[in-house]
Image (cartoon, rainbow, N blue to C red; front, side, top):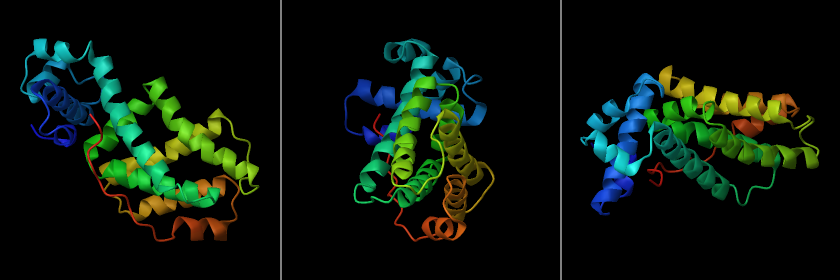
Length: 215
């Protein structure tokens, strides 16, 4: 099979390419059946390798889940953060980050659906994603534009609404405007006046180009 991880390592050695095929197969099976229901046997079969080959690359399914989810989430978060290097306004950063994340995660349904399932089942992944969100929330509070107390519940609410956008895009057929609408609701939750929240969340942006995450 050829997928997003395999494309990233095209031309690399056999071992690297086999690991990437397993990650692509896992992303597909996680999206189809959920993390718990996707068996190692089914993943290995989809990758056209034996179960023994699977264990040459991953200790168990949990390690594979972590590799896939972290590969996707870290790539998205780092790319979005880099794209916001020249954006100082916390309101714009939250809007931009939410909209970019939803569109990137929705560009390949298996990415988004795997992320949705993995974020809440992998505490380390949830903490990593939360660290990016919390930094912009703290910035907005310092600047006086967010009138909230930043705590774990607020960060979870922000992540949940972002993931809901991914769900609506990948599973319910919602159009790209859903990212702007969710960003607007997030900003209003943070205490941004409605008119400013609407302007910031519907401002035209250039979406980041889709590329496979690093395997």
